[in-house]
Image 1 (tube, rainbow, N blue to C red):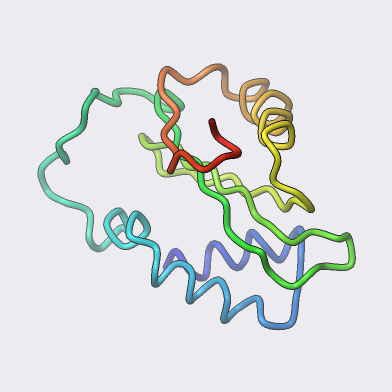
Image 2 (cartoon, helix red, strand yellow; image 1 turned 90 degrees about the horizontal axis):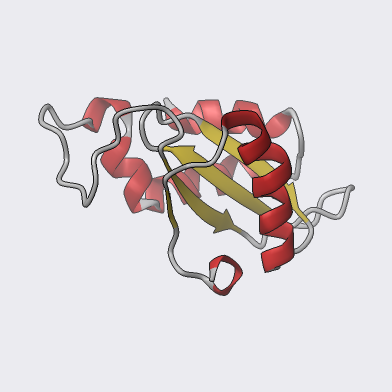
Amino acid sequence: GGQQKTLFRLTARVYWESMKKDVFNYIYACQACQQFKYNNAPTASPIQLHAVNEPWHTIGMAIMGPFPTTARQKRFLLVIVDYFTRWIELFPLNSITSIDITNILTNEIFSKYGLPKHIVSDNGPQFI
């Protein structure tokens, strides 16, 4: 399921000894992951403040970590989810400043998919 896919995508970029356990624990505890995983997908559309009718119209962002430092000095993971397709983009980071997040959004997300109409986050200090 989602745990295996997330682990597979992560191992293409980073590795740490407890990675499998950390990913499984995070996804198990992640309310959004449990709510939107494939076998729990509601048969009716969930109530939303706005309609999501196309890919990359609305994205969600979260930061995972800190994790054990990788060989490339990465300790955090920026997770970006497209609400329409449920496509996930993962970005390992060594720091989680507003500038780090802005650079990834500009260079990796907006340049590839265009500007979303809505961005949803937990209002962490990096996102404000």
